[in-house]
Length: 294
Length: 304
Image (cartoon, rainbow over all chains, first blue to last red; front, side):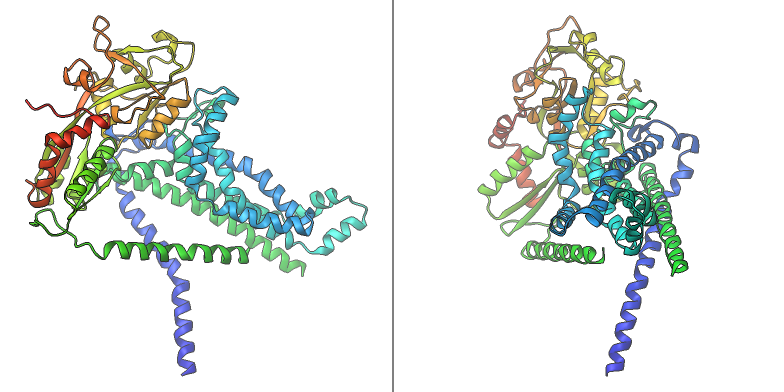
């Protein structure tokens, strides 16, 4: 009886383990099936064009790709110093009491639904940025980047913090013993030793930003403009995720527009795949190096 | 990290449970009714979906009708005219609300699914062009509005306002209001005209989003159904030509045909309606139900 239980449970766990691979393959197959017809229905020169206006058959996806990349890039630029700074503070500097306060607060920040952040963005951030920076409108790529930074900071903090904890105590002690100040020990020894973990944190933060939909849809203005100057960062843009979310409801299934939306889905999928593979490649290198040390 | 994930999972794991419980409890007592089923006095359930412009009015009608006929249950959701037609074609709703007429492609798809959509004009609506109350511009010709939205006029100074950039706001492309505005204002009703919205037009997902941005931003220009316009934004008087009189949108100016951009609002059913759905639509077209249109800022049908 006991052996039978054992077999059933191990089988069950095995199926659960493989199920995610099966789901991933199914999702990918579905995306390919629905998305690749776009390549034959729309000439490549029109698909990789700069005008997106699907109800008049303009399917240029470049402004959407550049919009997504722009908000993601700048959100990480904002989230990196805050995220890593917070992680360093929690792991290295903060006294026990503050540490115990900060960690749950950051978890709560991670738990705020993005639509709530988007709502606060519309009501508070958008009017403020328009007045403060004297912009034509507050619905801009910059506004989206700030919200995305808020969304990706908790991810970055928790992973970077783990990486810092993994640095052996002897490293810090050695640095202090050599006469380094606390800051010098952090900057010169602890952070470099944890750099692969910090990089993984940043990659996952990028993945989080790239895939976020609701908050960016609410505050970026959704205008499919090609960024062509530095000022573009302070003007509206339209991301790939927002386009799929706002247009999927109306398209007739099987139409060209429908296929192009799935093609955008493939691009998003491939981009996040690249990010995740890079992240795991980075942490794989870390593991082999640690094995060498021990 | 592991503990963080476990704790988050514990939090998250409850939601599907709660949601599925809610779904189960809300589904249980209702018997699904198809469009053609004859339902007289028993519990009838009418699903009504589509145009965001029409959603408030449809809700008001549904509430009033359910008071008069407690045995009928009506659910109303928005999403845009295109969404409503898609749902009607897929058979998930009984009545589709629309702020534009059904497209030939959509009729084709409906026929492929075995029914002919039947159209009912249920109310009229004016499209108001709105700006921030701080904007001194108070009247424009249709041609000026068209040029603004095409990106040919980019500063309020060019139409008699302050030296400010113009920020164009529009609904998303799945909105019937978007399509109507494109055809009637930007293309000035000329079907050979292929011009369209300037690429930097902000496409906002909701009517409320447009009102919120116009209320806050003195650079903005937007358009919306008259029923959505709040006193916090300023409506623009419109004229077809410079020599014409500039007219503000209202029920009266739509009925006497002096306001240039007004349109009909529609409901579509699967074939000629029968039973509860027919009774409901007949009631909507009655004088009593049409009174509600004025209260909500729409324009009642005129019996000719």
